[in-house]
Length: 131
Image 1 (cartoon, rainbow, N blue to C red):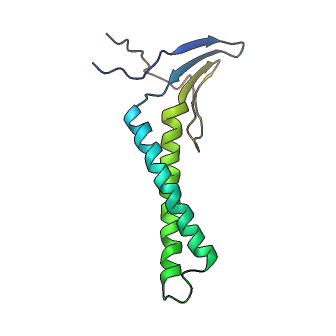
Image 2: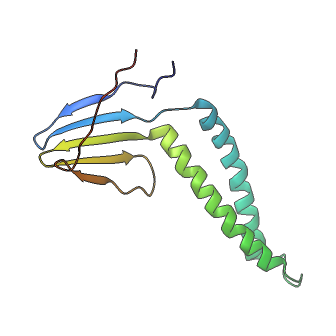
Image 3: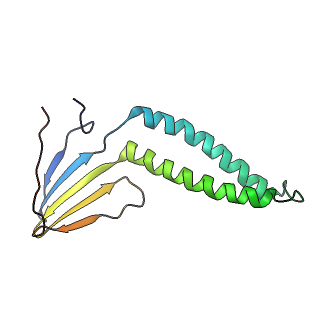
């Protein structure tokens, strides 16, 4: 049976409530693949920016416009890859049980907004222990 994450959840009792730290499920293939892919991505990003800034493509009809369009898509794609890489390397989920609320925060996941739930509205919650 597959483990849900590589590590053990840590329970911390604080004055505000209880925090449970759950490490992100790590996949070494994804970490290694994205590390290599991001090196190539960076080379493409630098090459495209250098071509635009230096004016190498001036005078060639439509090339600057295409390169700018390509660069925007390339940058967005690289941003998603960086976000996944950071989650794989440093990610952990922090579940905070405080009086009246439960908050879920994903630390290490770029551009993530934590979610807070009213504990009176939660109906079914369970913990499943792995065999």
